Figure 1 (tube, rainbow, N blue to C red):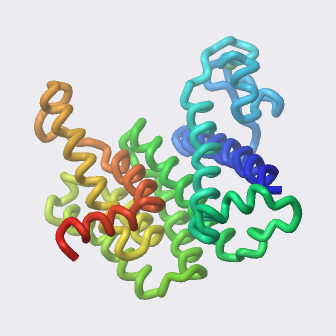
Figure 2 (cartoon, helix red, strand yellow):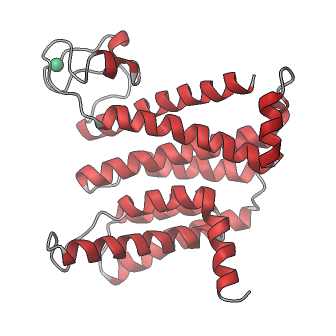
Length: 277
Ligand SMILES: [Zn+2]
């Protein structure tokens, strides 16, 4: 049972990765989210059997069946990434609830999948999965087009915030964290009159705040800025960017938030020990 669940979650991750790819492309090209995908090169509608995550890419050797135009490596990479990421989230949360040794017990358990009865496990996974998918759409979109898709950021912020309220979070915690996340960027936006950061970053800040809660939101913001500063320094030194050039902020915020979701508490504990608490 454990392996059936784990492999189903891997397949679900592939499907979500495929959906993330599709969402990024269709949001940009302004197409409806419904209806079949088409080849961007020749416009040929893609049959369902040529549109299976990962499998079709391998069978078609990364080319369109009709025009043989290359399909971007982004597609299978994002799909595999999500398959692995979702299995990781599943094992991580099982270890969190049953203990690391408990997972070994679950693997050996033949019948009676006791994790089915852990109600919070499914809520946490729903929160993690939707949070990670939204972050990936924002990351890819900002990376490619230096824009934040608000059609994703705002509904996702509402969804993960609501799921957190059903979990252990107090509403004051989520409220404060959301205000910190959005406010952090709002202040910079107002001070710079929109020159340092865009309005979309405020919405991403809100998503991070509602998704992570207090105090993890602080860790995510800190990590994003350390990562961004390091990258800016590297680009300056190597002469690939000039001083004052803008880096797409969400490209740092999204990975920092995903990392903080799983390892933020460990980072916080390490830091508090470091400064002697
Ligand atoms: Zn084609």
